[in-house]
Amino acid sequence: MLAISDKKEVSVVLRVRIEIVLSALLGTATILTAVWPTWIESLFGFDPDGGNGNAEWWIVAVLAVTTIAAVALTRHDLRVTRRRTSIGTP
Image (cartoon, rainbow, N blue to C red; front, top):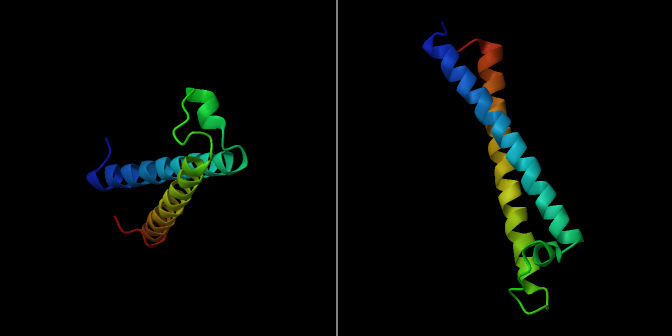
């Protein structure tokens, strides 16, 4: 049976893994939207800006900021996890 400190460590490691996957997905969506801005319209069949492209660039900006925030959070949590592991502190 896992001790409470082991459960905490597992949950932190799981959270870091989820954050890494989320950061990768957000980064991919940012690049995809910047390179092929009409993929949203192709996928959903909805054109929110009437074809001038403003909505797509706003989406790129929001995705980029969200990606940067997710990467920063992931780096912080990964550093904390590595520090705890190297020190041996629960």
